Structures are given as C-alpha cells and as structure tokens.
Length: 194
Ligand SMILES: Cc1cc2nc3c(=O)[nH]c(=O)nc-3n(C[C@H](O)[C@H](O)[C@H](O)COP(=O)(O)O)c2cc1C
Image 1 (cartoon, rainbow, N blue to C red):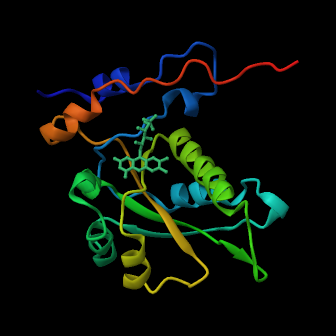
Image 2: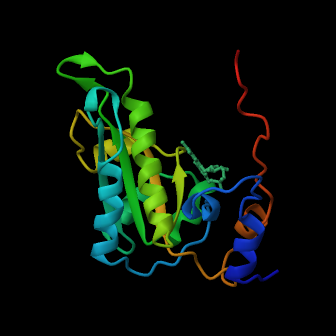
C-alpha cells in the first residue's frame, strides 16, 4: 500500500475538540523522514526554543548532542537502537537529549521533568517550521554515553529523530502499517475541583 504525505497527515492529525495553536494541532510522531539536510538557521531556532523552557530554580538541567544523517556518529547512534526503532535511519538529524540529575552536588528532583519541558519546546518549534520529530526512549543509553564519551554529568534519556516528513511512497510496509493506525488520546484528563 502506498500513500501520499497529504494522506498520512490527514490520517494522523489529531481530531480537535477545541482550538489549539497550529504546531500542537499539526504535530504527530512519524516513522518516516526525509534525510534532507536541515539548514543551520532552523536548527538554531529549534535549540533556541529548547533553551528558553522553564525549569525548577531556573537550573536548566538539559543538554543536547546532535548529528546529521550519513555521519559516523549517526551510524553509532543507530547501533544503540533495537531493531524495532530502525525506522529512525531515515531521520535528517538525531538529537541525544540529556538531563543533568545533579546540581551543585545535590540531586535535582525536577531534572527529568524539566528535560521534558525543554524537549516539548524544541518539538513545537520544529513543528512550527514544518519539521516532524519522534522521540526514542528505547535505546541503549549506557552505550551512547560510552561511544561519545559524554560529559559524566549528562544523562542521556531520549534520542529525538527529526526532519521533514518522508515520502510515504517509500516507507517500509511494516512501518506504514504502524503509522496509519490511529493514536487515540484520552478524552478525560482534567476535572475542576471544588
Ligand atoms: C519518552 C518517550 C519515549 C518514546 N520512545 C519511543 C520508542 O522507543 N520508539 C518509538 O517508535 N516511539 C517512541 N516514542 C513515541 C511515542 O510512541 C509517541 O509519541 C506516541 O505513540 C504518541 O504518538 P504521537 O506523538 O504521534 O501523538 C516515545 C515518546 C516519548 C515521549
């Protein structure tokens, strides 16, 4: 089965019950990317959005390492993924998103939460520029740490695969079948308390 980019966007776009800003309405996590190089100015904007995120005590406990498709580092990151995440091979860029669990010798209980906020800021800025992202938690983070000799204070948590949406006429069937499934969201997530 072959489908166009427009069709996958229509299938995966969240069904809105109420209006939200465009990057939220458009965002979904695809398994097929264009490997086309991302202009530096766009990458700069994307990391700028991550930099501006809120954090407990303004500690900003995050750090990002990134690499482009076809580099030796890109291949090393692929070697840290289980086969189930090999769809990521077409991404234009991989970002290793790290949190800093310790600040001034003390454990920072907000660090992981803050990394999530920073990543979401990054993802929405990317979406605003019409790039898509899919986060990967299922990877060998200890291997990542060793391969790149990461700063000992930086704990890798997810790899973010991103780039323009791929040409879905070339996606492997196994990933297409996953991507065309609906990704329903919970309908009841907030309740007014009195
Ligand atoms: C922390 C985290 C870890 C994830 N790990 C993986 C992963 O290892 N492999 C994968 O294909 N998707 C992974 N995802 C993507 C989620 O499966 C995806 O966001 C979810 O199905 C909702 O779909 P949506 O982002 O299109 O709304 C991860 C997402 C997050 C936030």
